[in-house]
Length: 96
Image (cartoon, rainbow, N blue to C red; front, side, top):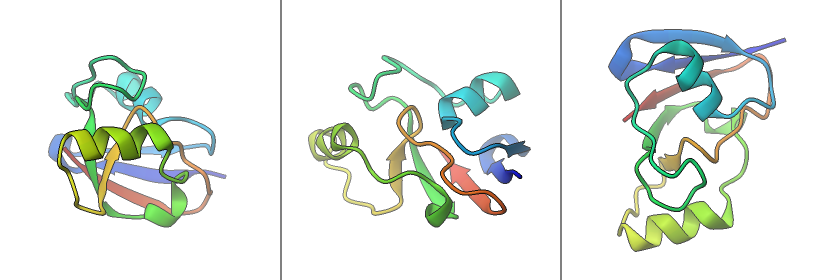
């Protein structure tokens, strides 16, 4: 069972098994979404979850700290390197 992840900027759609990070998905798909530290500290990989937040892992403490540092208060904002697909049979739409 998979969840469909659409990276809207790149017109990509990938079916993904739970447990994979968005970083894993992006690197395997050839998306242009940028990454910096790959550890949830720099904020380079901020994305906006346009739909499907229920199919993603909970926001990590690292994400909260980075979003505060960036003054990013949009509840749709997440760090792609920290998010994982948590539930199957869904649709997640991301913009960066």
